[in-house]
Image (cartoon, rainbow, N blue to C red; front, top):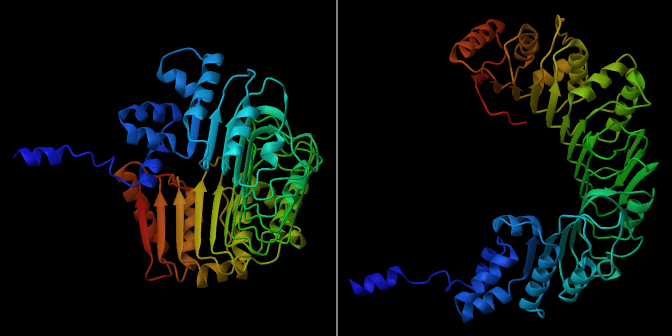
Length: 454
């Protein structure tokens, strides 16, 4: 019995391999790792050799229910850096200094560079409104990933450097020079991931992104950010680009070229352009879609469909057929303008396999949907296998959208309708759908209150 008790209290954690313990400790902030080092000599060695540095001024003082102390945090950073084994490679250096105080960030980064740091993640609100990256970081050969969050301070990007960088994420940084991003990207021959989120871009005349290595590109600017591409031209030319996401205002112009590897596209427009209106915006979005004809998955918002409908009477503006497109996700009202845009998209997607529509509230009288275009009927009849309608409210205009899909979808396998709250409402929807006489004998119609996944 005594032996069993001993085995029960055996320290299995300490017996794990060093690299596994280091991985576990990587989820803790560095001040907590230092505390653990007092357990034993082995744990002191393990904690000192952890290849991660992670300190956040807000979480550090909130855990202690104390007000942020600038000098105390500087002392903490210095003590942790001194505690760690400086001869080992640093896999990640993550630091959040919070408030707009004077910090020794350049010195701390230089110390990380001496340890051949591979990933740097800095969140700060600089004392001065302009930030210039230290030369030690720009010329760091070991650096693979860089994330900067600057609370809308001006960022001066270098024109050379970062020769081994693979991932660059800029958040809340204001960019002032047209070729700042393009110049930096041209000096990063290995860059794979680029993300610009909530960055001040409103002073740029052109944002040009050209790369032979870039695979993932994200540009996001909410309407509350300090400025998106309202008055700017967006140029993207990346032969290996696989994923592109754009959330923001309608730019002044779009040029997408050399996107032969493009697989996934997500376009979410938050507001119409200040200078370009109505039909002109529709033509501009048609031009955008020309560059995406190789995509396999496309996701578009309701505002996109609204302006697209403005250009329907000019077929020459619509892009070439998307033969690779397999998945189409749309957020849309079921008013005539949006429906006609949806039909046009279906007609130019002859190999579409899955259609998902997030239904927004539609007001006013609905006009019947006309699915008489041969290209639309070909898509519905020969290829489309799954349809999902989210936030279905059981209104007449929504049923009029479901009817032609069921009546013309000869190879449909599944139609999923999510949204109804009550079982009674679900039963009424099923009863109504049975009246449509689906053309596919194998189709399964599911009606349930489902999660709002889109």
